[in-house]
Image 1: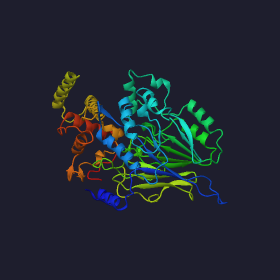
Image 2: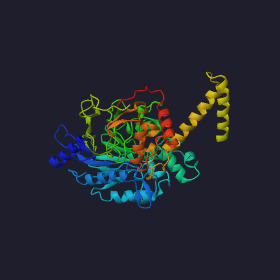
Image 3: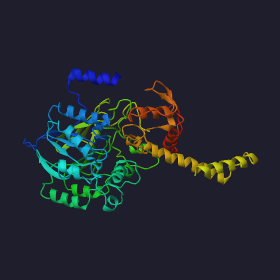
Image 4: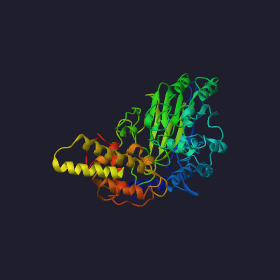
Length: 356
Length: 131
């Protein structure tokens, strides 16, 4: 057993509270007159499981283990999350068998589950099976004074959808993150109109949380760390005092602030991705605020994967990243600087490894 | 194509015997074509779900061959406990995440993989032994 692993296991025995997942706490400060402005709450995000069918009932073991562990540990969390959002890419190649396999594993969760669509769930049958299992891919709900929106941000134009010989060819092209024949994602006009309507009667001081699979900001187009109409969606969110966008897809920790909108990414349970700037042949724009994760050790298969508990407080989110084989991290909203920051590493590089 | 290549090779051999030190534009073009065809083949192996046994491909974890650091090999690969070449690390990946069978180090697919991975890293300073 390696030291890092031993330390982690030892502390589990000692404290019984170290859980590899991201907890998100939404907390509300009291108003100056002593009244509560809303309730604090906690939810969890599990994402990017990429369950990959080999044949029949055989699936890639490594990816299965990531999701199973996230589900098991989510069930042990204290406080129990109010709900668990699955951030998309339940399947690898959009197959019904993969989606059903994922639904079965997620069915063990003891908290209410909310689902979001990822491109790996969509481009085989254009979401048909996923929608049969989980319903509409965009919706909103209110929770303890916060308005929560789930978007389907992985849409592309019709011409791209129809240019392929077979649905599987289309799916495989979109599944290759670095495939040059992919297409940039968008939320699209219809959903933007829906969002405008959805937010029409929401008071501007209501905290908003928007979930999207792809980042609602532009980081690197080559890997679709990108949403083509990101600025148009941001414009719809701008009038609100406190907006939090939580996105998946990138398999790494990223965070940023644009105007009133705080951005946070969540981890994948399956495998980590390098930061886009490590690809030296192309320019990318990772938000400067982000303190990089350290490099994954491939000999520990869960290293640099993870899940998160999220605290919501004063309408802002704190992400507690639970990272097996790695030091857990907390990216919290700093009320002083008015931006998300790593509570430990914001001013220094995480030792000992750099990405290059 | 193969026949054509062999024919070109023999032409070069004959020409080479006459002017041992001179590369012609035709030489350079041929070598470039040969090299690029192997890089292209390497990309195909890199995204081939049949390289291992579990349909996992190299580019699932390494988009554009990132996080492979070909310029740092040979280096002490702490997990293997010795100074290793990139080919040995590639074989580790094939045997573990891809649950496949290791290749001979001079397997044409191995050479193609290294060609592709290194090409994606073109321009980065060579730093053997770096971590």
